Image (cartoon, rainbow, N blue to C red):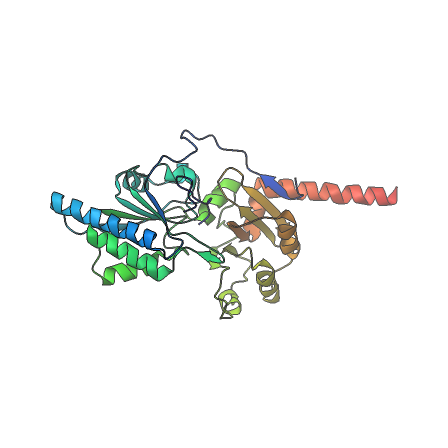
Length: 330
């Protein structure tokens, strides 16, 4: 789910309770190698002509090699750290012909892609979608029909808030062979990074993944959080940063204790990762004060208190409270 914005060839295809992640040393070059790239940001004739030419080129190659229709691979790239990629994902990235990739695929991961592959950026972010989901479906089908190995690169796992199921359904109805290569979802990657297990005997017997991003024309908050508040359940909210205040109101209304441990993690597992710990009663305020930006994952539940970083945070908070009391009584 959660990674940095990707750019190819220059084309955009100390607050209290906040800690920064120590930069990770990479064995690969930080920049992108030159490659053929199309950024799907407009309906211009040049873009469509470029894509049409790419499809025709693949068709010609298919005729020369007497190969059949192509296959589509929905590939999860994990939360962003390239060391968390699966071997299957790397092997496909090195041999693919066409890649349609999202905003949350990190630059270091993109460096594994075959340099001769056709790259098409189809990323989405709030208020700016380069292409509708239906257009992405059609592009995948056109390239698959032309032949070759087609990769749909997604941050996290394709089947956890990645709309991979929709792409699978569409392509299979068209007779296209689809294979999913799972990725480490943000909850698992970030939980491992911070020492927060999603379940723990005597603390949490279940975990619930919830999207914090809802359609503007629907009131889905109440339905999604109905029955979600349970002292033995860990709540993980994807894409919930912009709606955190409303999410907080709903959870508190459904009985979530205000002293429940919570953490918000921006750019999890990547250099520049930022973390905000807080008891839930003050969580929206602390997150807003920290200035965290998307992508940010929210983890709420008693398992957060198992992290050493939470224990450090609580120790610092207690020190501040003690200092204030001493100053007042002095």
